[in-house]
Image (cartoon, rainbow, N blue to C red):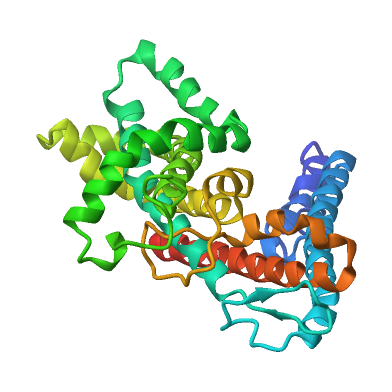
Length: 350
């Protein structure tokens, strides 16, 4: 009598239909827990702040791209009327005659060559010095001197370019006169140091301008390189030291390979500034009618300084269009330099 209720009483967990352990599938907790993750539905909750920030970031990128495209369209639109009146090849001529809009003859060849030479000369001087500064500040400099020295170097970037130009004309050019004369006398057989169209005594040459430009771009290259070198993983440095490497070997085998892409990027940023520098070169370089001979003792004008020199002609749209066409060349050149820098950096990462 007492066993009957026990046999007929069944708990909910013993029911196969309810627990999912029998032959009939159910919708119980056990069945849900065995569902593959790929079949489950996950809803990602996007917070309003993330949505707003993403929209602002995307809008900023689009806005900058539109502005750059608008600048390019403006340059082309204003340059075409002048180029249509040009009687010589704009890319291969070294003439610059724009006074008579009915008989214009202007070319960008000499301006382009001077711009490239003075910028590359400045870059060749600045890159080794900036590398040494970055290595010293990250590896060899005492801790209490790192920040003060870094601040002093960074302050070089805050000096106005016109101040650099005055310093180059009034202080650096007379100081460099004996050095320039010795280089011209001793290595004059080499085209780079041959007698050029500029005056070595006066100092208004690419040689002086390049050294001033190197000082101007030095803090940019040094700052970027320093920030990349300091990110070298400590584990890599400790591993090299554990293998018996000296401090210089650590720098050569660990720090420099890790930060090489940043060093190249900083150098390209400096080159970009050198290509577009105006006021310092406007004050230092002496214009000349002689042809450009790829000598550091040539005079002339860069594209940017030529535009500044011709500002008085901007009251006429056709004459201004000739200078805008030169600016378009500088615009394209800067883009090519940045593209090359990105290719180099991407190659280093690979």
